[in-house]
Image (tube, rainbow, N blue to C red; front, side, top):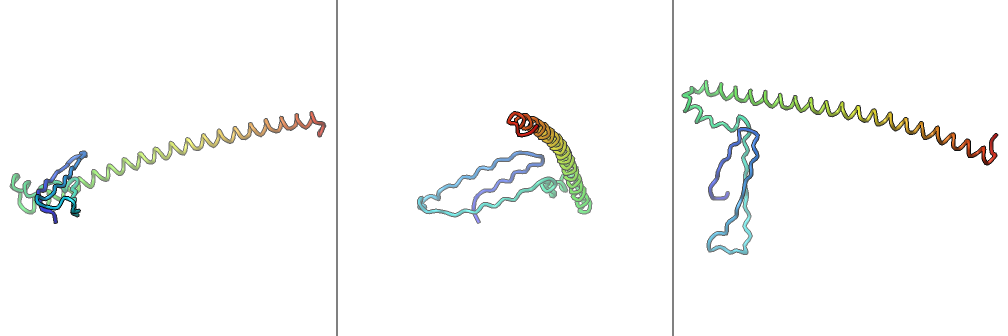
Length: 136
């Protein structure tokens, strides 16, 4: 595991985070030597970002109250996620209905164009064959 300093960044809302990594050469080390490094990410989202030890100390909560608060926050996060997916499903349904209507009208227009073209083609061929005296 790499030695060094680690900073934690908490994003409780929908933030955009950027993380910058730098690699330094060890003093006295060989510059041409390739060093493999492994970087681990631990991403916390929503209710996971709360430091419950700090909350318990500041609000002087008992262990049972703390556990109940954790469960309540997890339920709020689940409900929020459920509402989000419900809204996304409605958006997808609206898009699907809109596209279905567009495809229907496009099909009707194409059929009308084909019918008009075939009527024009029949009249043109009939006129052509009469002119060549192949039909009466």
